[in-house]
Amino acid sequence: MQIFTVQNFIIYLIIINIIGFLTMFIDKRKAEKGKWRIPEKTLFLITALGGGIGTISGMYTFRHKTKKLEFTIGLPFITALEIIGIIYYMFIY
Image 1 (tube, rainbow, N blue to C red):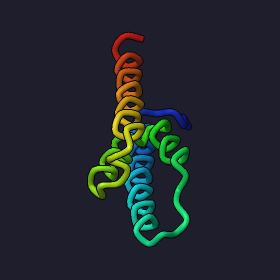
Image 2: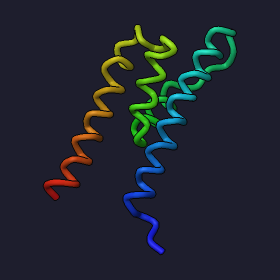
Image 3: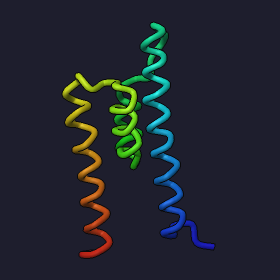
Image 4: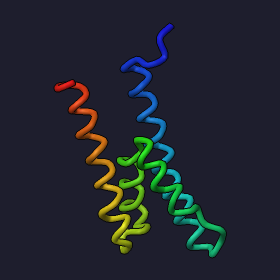
């Protein structure tokens, strides 16, 4: 049985993006209640692991971290690099 298939990759991307979206939601709720927050490193890590669409969607849906330049530029930049890498791998490599 092969683990690294296109189907498994797509399932992984769906799951990591749901996690990214939910992480932004949870962090926003914790911020509103003045509770312990999810570290910013964690939000960037989820994005770097392929969850960029989810974290960016969550950022704008919940209006969370939208005033922080490192998030409004950093998350889309990481996501764009990943998309370019996938396209390169699929069509050129």
